[in-house]
Length: 444
Ligand SMILES: [Zn+2]
Image (cartoon, rainbow, N blue to C red):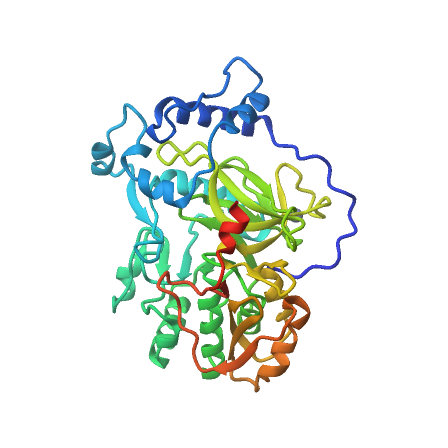
């Protein structure tokens, strides 16, 4: 999430995807329609027609795949005909991997490590800095996120460093809430980072922002990795500011998930480019909803994954497509101007407009001394804003609340708090409307 100057480049030409992308999509859809029980009854693509029109026509015949439908299909209706799930699990070709969260939110997938590693490497290749570091023969990565089942591992409790290293990846965190980190925990993680000397630090931005503030209070300068990539949840600009104050490393934003892999990577100009060899991305525009002009729901179809065949998977995330060419020159896939936050985290202004997490975050981007915030809507004109300072100066609650008046139509009731707890999912939910199902409105 790097800031960038206003873009004066020419209007973006029509989207061009390489022929190999359309061939892979046609192949995937034929495989899904023909062999994956979840899609039984859907007519696959015409193999005699050109790949692009055949793939487009067939794709439109698939329903949008919700998280709930994926949860119900797992595992047997995802297993292609002719494959043995038991044999694949036994010989280690696949694993069951769950997203973090409570039972109701948790989704499991069939995890193919070879597919994951290959598409991740190509995702990192979209930015010159991450490309250079991830191609080092001895590439090492440290991870700072929730210890509750991140990827395919759980690291809750006190485990020695060696037991938290999986191949070339070191998992730093062992506490379920960063507020629970003792001084000793913070120093341990700083020591381990130094000893492991990773090329990259992959982090949940909220966790890394908390870590950065604690390091700063202790006067400890951390090891500088080759780059930091933000993942796992929406990166607030206040989180990025806290990280940038302490870490002398480029901060890059990556968009991915356990379900979809690594579909987008930020480039050196702050835009997000599509990792188009490994997924097909569709945008469902929400221009018809007041406040959401230019914003779209993101659907992902995974490509070339022998085991996990997600077609038109509803990521639950909102994005904004770039309207002009990116100054980096990449033009072989979709380009996003911004990630706007989750559809379930929309709020509604007093005049009825829908407001994304990113809009609220942008309004609070320059509040010095603010580490973290949380907005809750309880009624049409009733908002509560909790503010957590970084300790460097006082945060004036009413002054900050007034910064949201233009956006929400009313100033929230605001207070400074000493802690903002992490959700059961291991993530922080920045915005939520508790009085109305706005995700339902956006999906209708
Ligand atoms: Zn670019």
